[in-house]
Image (cartoon, rainbow, N blue to C red; front, top):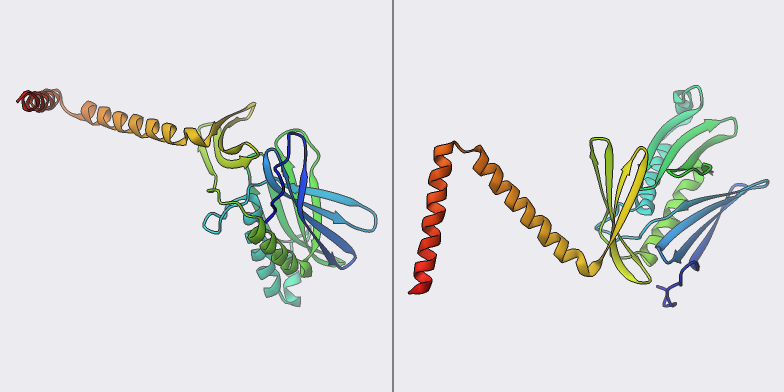
Length: 259
């Protein structure tokens, strides 16, 4: 684990770097850190191009493995298992565009598409990153026989640079999506709650020291609403009886206190 001082605003530190040689391509996996937290950048360097795909995530414990990088590692491993199960005859299972298997990963501001395909040069995994804000798509193409090596490298980075933070939450209601993510930066741990609609996105940040206060408030509100729902569901006569019981209990408490 790195012991360097946390980065200042606008500064980006590189904590680790790995290089993979797969056929004629080189892939660089860099663990970096800025004021928003840690993330992984994967760069594909071919003979004629360089493509970057960024996984801006917070590393989590082994118990909570739903961050983008951990989820990507898990889906990548499944793609490799499927590839390993294929035989030469299976190439006929590809669709007209050469697609053998596909998957998708949702993150708060990004989507990652994993497409295992086949063309005249062989089988490969195409990973596409799509961002919510206007930005060009990023793509990398990984030769299928190199997926296992990439999984192994991600395992090493996750093991050595993970942070003990819980998994995020995604809630879909009506035409809105809410995201809750616990993150860490140079100023400490915080929770980001984002509301995403087709035409708008807004977020609030809650420092760690406010977690308990918000939790207690939510619990109190839920309990009060549940009590009101029960009372409103009772017939009018039962409500009167319930009120008498509450009043009697209150009187007994007061009398007991006076004694």
